[in-house]
Amino acid sequence: MTEFLNPVFQQWSSLLKEKIVQFLNLVNTHIIKTHNSFPKKILVSFRSIEEDQVEEWRQLIQLLGFVVTLAPLNEDRKVFQDKLDNNDILILLLNSEYATLVQEDEKRSGASLRKMILEFGSRKPDALFPLLCSGTFGMALTVVSSNFLIRNCCKGFLFPTATPTILGEEHVHKWLTFIDVLLHPSGSQGLGVIPDLIELEKVSSVEPLVKYQELFQNLSGEIEEAAVRQILKKDLKKKLQKNILRPFTLQKTEHIWHTVAGIVDEVLKNEQLKTGVVLCGKNVDSVLAGFILEKVLDEKPNVFVVSIDLESFDSQKTGQNYVWQELEERVKFKTQEIQRLQKQTQPKVILFKNYDQLGRAENLFVKTKLRSWGKSLKIFVTCRQSFFEHREIDSCFIEDPFNPSLGTIKKLWMPSWQEVPLEIQELLKAQHDLQNSKLGLKESTKIQPALNELWTTKRDKALQMLLSDFLVNLNTVLVKRGVLKQKIWQNEQVFISYAWERDASDLKKQHRLLKQFVGDLMSLGISVWLDIEKMTGDIDQQMFGNIGKSQIVLLIGTKRYVERAKDVQTNVAKEFQTIISRLESRLLK
Image 1 (cartoon, helix red, strand yellow):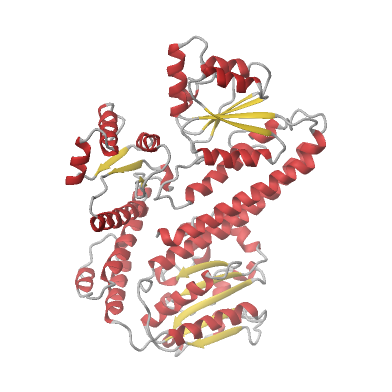
Image 2 (image 1 turned 45 degrees about the vertical axis):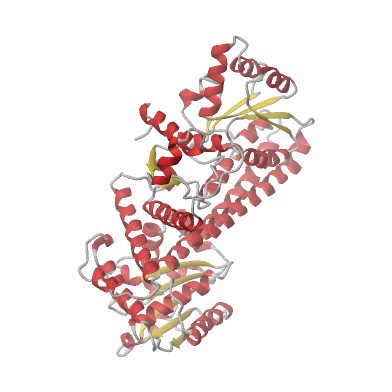
């Protein structure tokens, strides 16, 4: 799933940073330059955090006109004191590594780092800003006293660890945490760091505070809109990833793709058209039509897309609103997010797949109250042709059944897929049986025989798709039972310890299997750290740091691992000894 979700989160992360930069520039123009007469000098002290991440953070704060200096913490107290003497503000990025060094230093010397920090904070109010990036408040109090406001950044990832398994979602939460803790005038941690630094609540005039709140409200609105778009994009990517046709090269279907894609462009460009209906002959045609429509719509950058498979809805519950149920229960939208989507003036599309599975003819605009979604809404529908042999088709998809408008529906009789590969036919049978089993967890007597008959090179991919679907469903059950948290970064981290194979071909196979294993764990909702690429920089620091952040270790005890673990000069040996030490200290499960 990584190949599908990475671009989504990367785009979202880049957009969030872009909005933050715009906001800070506006604050500098309308507030700092108008109401602050001198630039403050800020020292940022940290330890065991990637310096390029802190540098990115520094560049943002400097947009406000502050002079920001980075100071990686070490044991040289004189250098640290000199830096304190030359700055007005001290921001501490606290984690366990920072606290450990401060505690060890305090045991050795009376003129300790902690004493220097507390003396600096006592010079004047609001000179010291401790930010808890990881760990507990008890740990933070070994560095600063309870007299200072300690802002908690642990709910998000202000400085996420850069690992090969990262999907990008952590970087999205990095920026959301930055907004909440640093920019928000009244966020989860109270007054944000930036409003505090520019002393918004202390200036005699209320104008700067009012202006800041106005700018932040605009920022919040833009971020909420971006969040809605990206969550829908992520959901659509997941549906595409799970589609049974995705791994296959769909030969001799080019004319079908061209025909179905054409109806999308025609409906979106024609203001009079509201609905595009694709009528299909066979079940496989419906699956192909839904796949094509999702692929084409996914490539439309400025369109909000909601894809709904009506086959998964209970046809007996006649009172349900399919759109709201999809958005609330499956996409996990809150009411205000759905309302924001409804009010969007940019193009919105709702795709209803397998309309015939409802078992009855009902008007979708009336049933799901789509008339309140505005003029920018378009709907697309896939349906078996046979369903309308004895039913009126237009009445089901016309916007206002009581005031019908001619020419608002575009109907397409999709060309049939004539030469369907046997492997796809069998997978469709297996998928249908899996979908009919409750939550996809009941063992099916039809799935295994169908899969055993797959003989092509796509067999492994097909099996992996079914396994991924099972793991996602299992995650849903475990979250409901409280075994796992809903967000992957809220769950315990697993550290995978292994030794690189000597032979190049064996190493390639090893990495391929490990990547797949990590992908399966993450589908289940488990956070994983894996050194799949050679680490650069301070290797020991990265290795020890990530073992320290993990609660579970999976040790791949190959023959090569045993050999390397016995050689005390190797990284494997250092890693193994660190694991044993944490295990003996009961820091691992």
